[in-house]
Length: 81
Image (tube, rainbow, N blue to C red):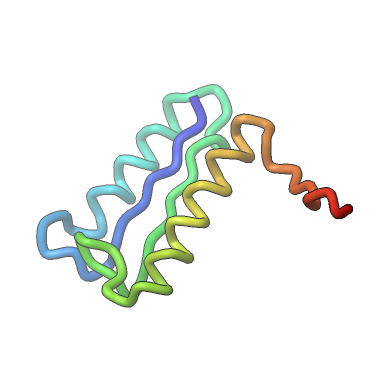
C-alpha cells in the first residue's frame, strides 16, 4: 500500500534515522518503492509544530496526500447563485 511516513528531526523519542531506515526497508520490499513517502520536518519534534498555523499546514498536507491516494484530490469551486 501507499505509505506516508511523517517524522521530525528534533524528536526526543524517535531518532531521525529510525523512520528513514524503515522507509528504506519498505522501499526495498515493495514492488513499487515510489509508493513510500518520507516527510521529515527539520524544525519539529515528536509533537509536531508548536505554532498553530504551522500545525494546520502540516495537517493540510496529510489530508491532501490522503485525498490524492483516494482519488478525491480534484478541487471543485462551490456553486454560486
